[in-house]
Every structure is written in structure tokens, then in C-alpha cells.
Amino acid sequence: MKYPKNGRFGEVGGKYIPETLVPAIEELEENYLKFKNDKEFKKELDYYLKVYAGRPTPLYYAKNLSEKLGGAKIYLKREDLLHGGAHKINNTLGQALLAKKMNKKRIIAETGAGQHGVATAMACAALGMKAEVYMGYRDTIRQKQNVLRMNMLGCKVHPVKSGSKTLKDAINEAIRDWITNVENTYYLLGSAVGPHPYPVMVRDFQSVIGNEIKSQMKKISNKAPDTVIACVGGGSNAIGTFYPLVDSDSEIIGVEAAGHGLKSKMHSATLSAGSKG
Image (tube, rainbow, N blue to C red; front, side):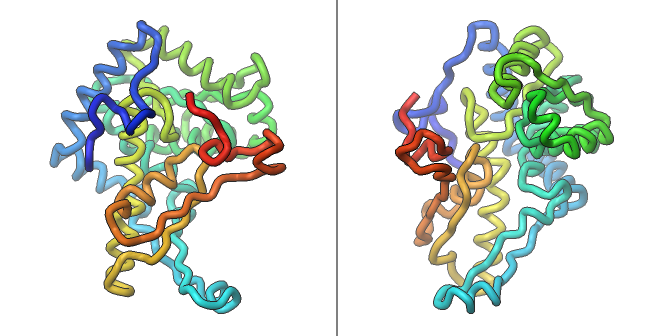
């Protein structure tokens, strides 16, 4: 895995953080570099990914869809079959295990719809760690089932009633918590965002998806797929799928949510129609 100098990917990336978080981010990067290639760390992570999460996930040939559309043979990478129902656990297991190696006693996270919160709670339950998740109050009502799942896993959910009572306010509260309790607390980010080294860590822990696709397609057709398509939201699924295939001959396509149209300002297509910074 290539490690970007100073955490920069061309003109994006880097670290723009409050002074109070500089020691915590430096500690995180130091420990990630220490453990990411450590044989025992990788062995333990591989164990949990296989036995607890349910990897490898199958590459399913969608025969009926392929015939209906005509032409291409379409394969679906079934990350939905993982424990928890999503790819999120690839990253939360990796980061939670790293936090444990760093002797952090408490893990906090933010969540919107609740998938990352559930995956964080699952990873902490498996590793015997304390988990607390910040979630916008409106989201706790809309996604009550995920709140119940987090509680069942021993995770404390903090409903955030400030601002719009949604994800951005949950993030703000999680960061306030981290600043206050930085000595014993690890902030587990779920998307390819935030200060370095978070985007790199998410990329590396999620790259298990793309690496499996490469090996599975080699058995099926003895070559990389002609085209790889992934949805792009927070970016963790897409970056994990695409990164191992960047140097192959595969055409890479990311699909963003257009909402009411790119000119409406009511969309989630930040890469297609957003602005820098």
C-alpha cells in the first residue's frame, strides 16, 4: 500500500485540526505506521474479518440481470452478507484493534443512518472495548432499529439535540468529546474523510474488498474485471473497491447520488458538482 507523503493526495488531504488535537493525531499516525505491517496485528485482524465478520464475501454472477440488460456479465460483490449487513465492519474492526494496541479504553464514533454506529458497536463488543456513539436526535427517531441494535451490543448512544439534530451535529459533539477526553479515547471515523491519517487508514482497511475482487475475478476469467462500479457517498466502499485495481486495466466508475439534479443544489454529488475545501 502506498503511503502518501504528509497525507496529501495531490492538492487535497493533509491535516487541518485544532491545536489541542495535534498530539492525538500524531500519536495515531505513529501507531498506525507501527502496526499496519506488523505480522501479529495483521494475523489478528484477518482472524476477526474471517471468523467474526464473515470474509471473504462471494462474488455473485447476476445471471438474470446480465441476460436482461444484454452484453456484459455482471457480478455483484456481496458486502451485504457481512455480519451487520454492510462493508462498514472492515474498517471498524481494523481501527478498534489499533485502538486496543494503543491502550485506549474508550471508543467514540458518529453515525447518521446508524450503519457505522452498529459496526463500531460490533467491533468493540468483539474486542471487549467500551463504545459510545453520537447520533442526531432526528436520526435516532428515523433509525430506531439501529439504535436498539447498538444498545443490544452494549454501546451507549448519545442523541444530539443541537442544531439540525442530524449527522453534522453528531460529528461536532463527537469531536468535542474527543478534545475533552483525548488521553483515553479513540475517535473511530467511518468515511474517507477527516485529517490524515484517517483517509489512508479507511482506504487500507477497506481494500480487502478490491483485493478479493482481484483474486476472485482471476479464478473466473483469469484477468481483472473490464469495469468496476461502486457507489460514492462517504467514500469508504468506493476507495476500498477501487484502490487495489487502480493500476489494472479496469475502467473505474464511481456513482454519486444526483438527488434533484446537479444544478438544484439538492444532491450528494460532491465530486461531480461540489467545490474544493
